[in-house]
Amino acid sequence: MRTTAEDYQRTAAWLNDIGKQLHAKGFSLGYHNHDFEFTKFDGKTGFDILFENTDANHLKIELDCFWAAYTGNNPVDIIENYADRCVSLHVKDMKVGGDQHISTELGTGTLPLADYIQQGKKHSVRWFVVEQEHFTKDPVESAAQNATAIRAIFEK
Image (spheres, one colour):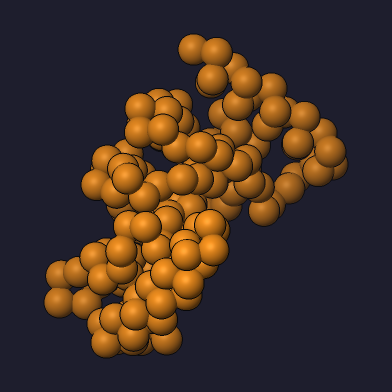
């Protein structure tokens, strides 16, 4: 459902319909991206096709900042462009080594996490989710380090 622009348009219609039904029952539908949504079709990303073809009340954004940045897109710009729809930011840092880009503990990578969080706060993002998929030490130690790092960012 993501090979062509038409695939994304059909997916948008499907998600919009589901979101409309959920909205009528008092719920919100959110979409969490990965990297593939930023593939371009005639100059438009799949991500933009999804959100330009759905109602803001029917489909919200759970923006994964890592994957947006991984594809060369700036999460700050995405949050600004879709300010009324972005309800959640998935915050994870990126360590670059050779041709590998992996998630790492907050504050130990290359991403400007404070910029993402500041933009999210500016536009009333409700949820900031720390996410890490790769570990070089005990995951509990990584979680503690991430908690300390995100607190420090929020305190600034």
